[in-house]
Length: 378
Image 1 (cartoon, helix red, strand yellow):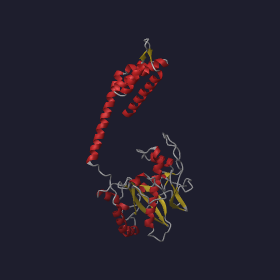
Image 2 (tube, helix red, strand yellow):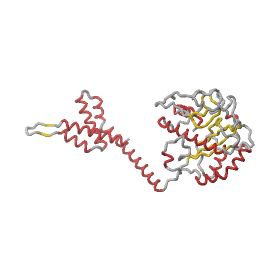
Image 3 (tube, one colour):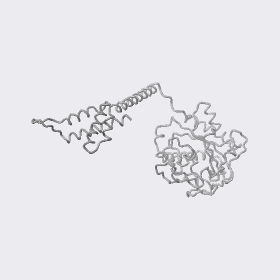
Image 4 (cartoon, helix red, strand yellow):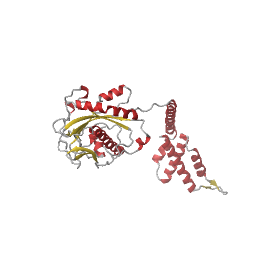
């Protein structure tokens, strides 16, 4: 669930040259490794990206991967969007294209529920969440008038390492965040680490789930709660947290804590049980129908396979359709209508007369009915 983690490069879309525009060195991790607070320490040395082909600012390939992933069926967009998040040197971070994001998800093995059709929406959500996160970071940074233009130096996804605050909230009964990021902000030469937890808010209004995320509307309704705060790496960050606590606590009280999905009511559980029983019954009936077809219509299937010539095959196909209707107990009216028309009428001089057009229409109606029945059964 890497957010900005799938994007790299400068605003012009070119590959980074081993360091970000904010000056992240290629040989080491920019985060402090020593901290007075053990649980809030910076990224440990083992977390520094060591692979030479990865950009240390975002742990992504130095050269953007815009190729199709092996086995990929659809062509995904390779267009990238410039974010509103500065990265230093006058540049801004560039978001990944749907193709790049898809490759990143596949490379990290997080593709259990990923569909190619959803990539445009996934990238839109990714971009919108990062814009909201940056707006939240700026709320903290406005306390520091000594730097009017902070920038995002680098970041790291740490979804498998819950923050101390997230662990405490989980113990109190709140749901776990679905993702965590650490962002390193360049405050005019001073590096400040921010911890971001992302929660799904199941109490959000319906329009928050139905609207397409927009980068230019970070305050629009969203089903995601973004909890941004500076890490307790130094006394200044501790002081900022203490000063901002009253206003943040009030905002959280007004908004309400994120809640897990509501438990189903007894009526909903009863309805679900009925639906499951009905589905099981339909499956059993379908299995019985398949067995009847095998036993009763085996010869008719063989006749269709072995028929030669249009006339012979038409007769075999007709007999097979009639057998299927009888074996499945479906399309009885259509089958009877065909039999009646195919039997024809007898003239006064004793000859049999069949309306060919009516017979053809009845044959098509029977076939259509059987196809509809088969689709519904599946």
